[in-house]
Image (cartoon, rainbow, N blue to C red; front, top):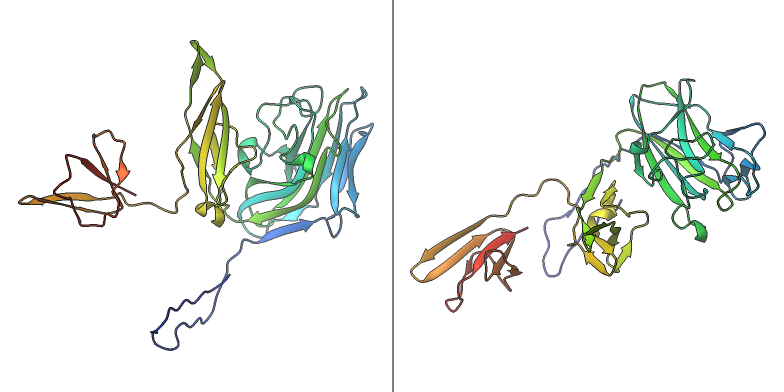
Length: 349
């Protein structure tokens, strides 16, 4: 948090210029477990027989890791990593965030799933729709394992090959003060094949008690045909933080959902859609805070002089359907030059 006082040259206001009497920063109460210090009191439950690579804690690496299965036929296997019972300090919504990387046999054969137990009850899966960032793979897990027919993490996490970690977040629900919550990370592997090793690694997690940020969603509608036959387009959302456009990992659908942080409001977003031999880029969009007032425009005439009063940016076009371009140097009120031909005007924000 920084309070920046800015003064230009040659003049000043009264003194003192700025006085701050006190400051209060309200943070959501949270439980943070960083495995670089210890194993966090987590425990492991395995199938019988245990999988070739169950959950194990590495003090040297400061993380929990499961190597998973092997290519030889055997299994199915699963290994469950269970947290201690965390106590809700207040009645409120609870959000789980954890830093991890994973590699499960692709095409929805193996997977990792997050489950919770409340007040000693049975473990239930955190639904896919509860994830607010880096959630489960689309589709359900198949094969012969414990996750058959359920949603889970699958394939390689973004940047896995380079050793990169991602942060996944999910709203667990609303709980009462004093409720106990046990978080379980369930790795499930069927037989005869596996992904890369390690299969799943977790560096840290946190439970935040309080309302999480609300989602913003960019939506697009695209259809493509080739010789009269429907073609499935390929989607890639991109963002620009000032250094150029870069692909957003995992943002490969017609909708992109984001839970904004401060930096996101300074970024630009766009969608690139591709089909065989064709590519289309959307207009650039931005996130906004709160409601935006609609622009206003009014036109008056006095003798031969036409004056436009407006808010926002003034644009003009030769036809009512455009294309519209910003009127260079225009300021409200704008006097239309006598030499200007017939034109259509609008104001935009």
